Image (cartoon, rainbow, N blue to C red; front, side):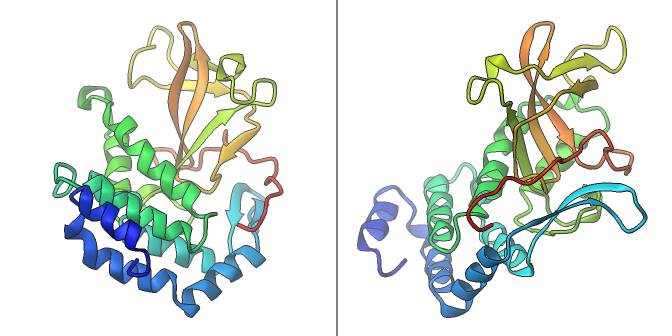
Length: 257
């Protein structure tokens, strides 16, 4: 951070000077030999798809090198996903400037893990649109609390058993690509006549690209009678059971992590 005068000037020009200490500390960390070596390990040892656990039950989990989880922890605990959404910061002038600069510094360490961090940042305001009266059981509120926690756990378990959560996105289908109007995934009410905000739906379809498949929940597009809508698909259901309807066929071949 201190080696980039243009960045320092930009942060100051947009009311972010109060975040200098955080940015100086993170900048020194991401530029260190120790953390650059960890980023190298995370890229040399890519993720592995585990479709079944040792008992033969489907788990559909992406297993990562320990260094990857260390990078995720550094980014999330530094505020890359949640600094600007925390109650004590979100109305503070320059909060998004400081958060954006944290993200910029993390990109210089390893771009791969910045994808799930960015999606977790972007999902928070979308989830906040859910009115409390439509959040029966409080699952969305629990997701938001986990996203705002600035904490991380790489464990594959219900969100109530971990200190923080991450969000992925499941949008693209092979026949449409970025044109989501061509999506064929169908959303059907779990209970007849219950098709409003907060009601449960069964989603049936195949996504060609689901970003960060190890996330705790996914913003997912599907067609209703009214057209394409956005749903939250949890990896673990509110009752604590694994969502057996969520299955991963393969991990895409990509560079590094």
